[in-house]
Length: 368
Picture 1 (cartoon, one colour):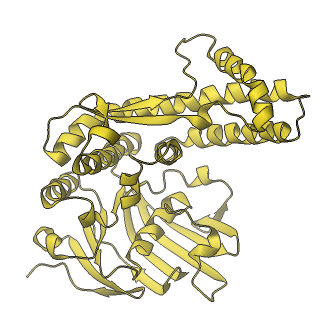
Picture 2 (cartoon, rainbow, N blue to C red):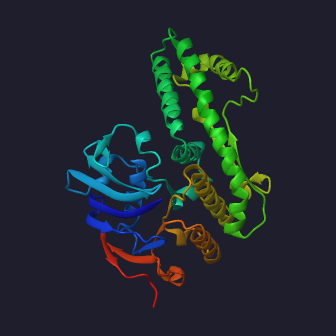
């Protein structure tokens, strides 16, 4: 997959801009707060219709403007597509080749994107909600069917919680049964995906970190259902046993919405026993595992976005990463405040841009 061109209008601090990323490596450099990450986010939007940073639609629109637009020309499976997002007030409208799409699933496969940012490293130490969000976002990129089951579960959960808030027990059994059925489908998606990432993780960690520690990614369901049979009944029983407490607290206290991921290094929790460098390498190795999984899914490499990468990795790990993405022919966009470490790796298939107050200045490919 390949992004040929991106046009931006009234997007965050960018009034108007057009960028044609390099086939291999594009480096955007400048001081903090100039808009470098906004350019990465616009590429992510083309593939997902949502920003990778928590933001409402009005946050994406330039100050004093009523609307914004992000438009991209992307190449996937040999087919070029024109993707346009129009942002206005609290609405997003997406068209592909001029035809409106109504569901996010209709955008699936047009542009797969993997993002690595400082916020991703923080998920090692933050709570389960952060890791669940990472798991579900990355899962959606490769599994179009997941989104329907995800929305189904959380829609039913919302209905069950609405009953609990009004202390109504009539109809609670029906919603509990439906929640258990949808919950098992959601857990199956998460388990299969985690197993696949874990299979790829060890090799990627060694490539990035140059270290031999055994690492692992473990899916940690809130309600384990180990038996192949009667799994729906197992989850439903737990939910029913929780009923009195749920009525007391007016919310559903158990289920897949409480799932977590466990990160291990040397058989011990990464959070407590991994150094800061090991934690960063682990998360980046997860991202590399995502790249390979998406490659298996679509038959071509996705686009890789690296936000403020120099602040997250030392020089040796960064060299290992850039060597890996070059070997795999991954189109990569990087933001940094210091361009110096990247100058030695810029080649003819690279581009260098300076970003200042939302404006782009092309500075060649960095080669003499």
